[in-house]
Image 1 (tube, rainbow, N blue to C red):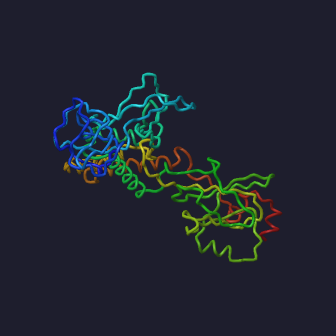
Image 2 (tube, one colour; image 1 turned 120 degrees about the horizontal axis):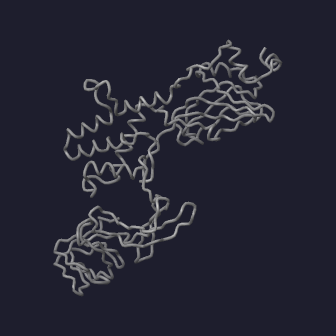
Length: 414
């Protein structure tokens, strides 16, 4: 908001009356039509002015007199914007401006507050900053609803952290620093277990598969930008008559390469096995190679994978972590350490990582251990048999699942 490289100080006490001139230490880098902020943001009596001309190396001419007195050594900043344009709409409607309000430079929380009397929880809002001098707009903010943020959204988590560390006026850390702590917390959780249940992506349910191409056995995985770790690959065979879905076998590189070593094989429309190929300059995610090489485009590959957690950037971003208080506790610990409260910081670190074993009580589970328990509960069948496989020998597993007729198997495999 403020360009602190464009900063000077009042050199002579200013009294309002009708005076439209400011005596300053230096006018270097200031030009006509600049928006000036006189005083420190969040402090009482801080106000806006518009520069009409630079009349000397130490004199700024204003378009209008200031409203308040300002003593010598008061800071003067250059601002890019002076107003906030707020728009609203009902769900599915069109955004329209409801107000263009001055930025409240003297707000102690460094916020500009506006109450929409006609708004409801369903009303959607967005805003953008505006320079009323040159009629220029900034980019739009994220869209939020009148109901506010959900518990997993960055805006909600920032508010919770600031309430705990008593920094609602943003004097200790900025929002960007808190968001950085959230991202570090996510990285630690992902590093602990990149296969948590809440990261699982089922491309079959999402109808987001990779169609086969006749004569092609290698397929780029870049279509899945959030791809992290592969769980399994489902294959949907569909030739217009037969439609069947099954899991492909995951074989080691050596076993797979042994299968494809016969370069005279003509292929088969029923894929059976796969292996992962590493990324290269063309694909940052890597590739899937299947066997046999399909003759026709009669199938679709559906990777089931664990996604990487997206970087949190804006207040409307939501973490995938189902216990967002973990990220809040991590951020609180870092801020308390900045404040010099090492004991309190350790308390919140334990709430994030989990209480060390020597202090644990059998009835208490917290921190990342609680996330691990939830992971086990969500992955393990509850009240159901763990195995649904009816073993019928190697040949039975390999061929019967494809729905091939016995004549087809005899003709092509024996």
